[in-house]
View 1: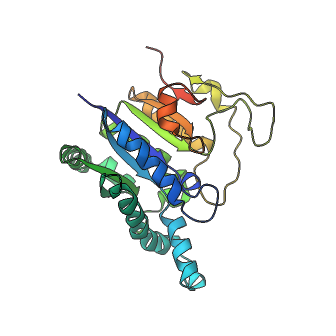
View 2 (view 1 turned 135 degrees about the horizontal axis):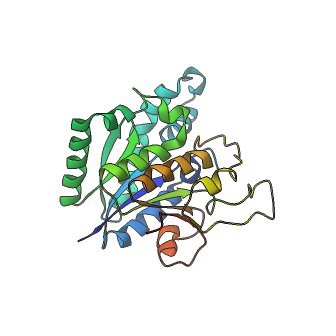
Length: 255
């Protein structure tokens, strides 16, 4: 029986720190998914709709006319899925779009419908790509960059592992962008021990800092789901983390 793996990719990772979505990043993700699918049923929770839209409206010269983030999300979501579809299909991977709001997780019937949809997509060999429906909800626009959303998806799918693909190796005892002597914490069993370490770095693209990642870890740990933070800038970051070849932070309760 395959394990259930949730992969969350944030805006800062998808853009590789630039103001444009990186095709190379999505291609690198697809290469890993091909290998991971042998032993895992996979859901990808992807941010990046607004970043994609900004790239598109800039090309078409009407960026000043689109100042609503919800409008940008509506423009960018279809473009983002086109990019995923083009790249993933070249690797023989099928994708399906799933748009959710946080209200969906508060409704037991919606929870069950979402769970059944994802399971059916797995059965027919499609990879669900989940994003928040930003045109009707603003939680992800305002907070979290889908960190919480990915944790909730992990809960309703009863996932074995959630991997947050970020622009940092994990959680440090001090902010490594501000302190050169910061040390990576490789395993966290008690979140209270690490909350005092959180010292945010401002980002112009992603809205999810370390606080939202720790909150995602809290949701996962409450439900017995393991969560990792890995650095998407490292080659084959997911597979290499599974093989313990790169540094990363693992969140799990002591058994």
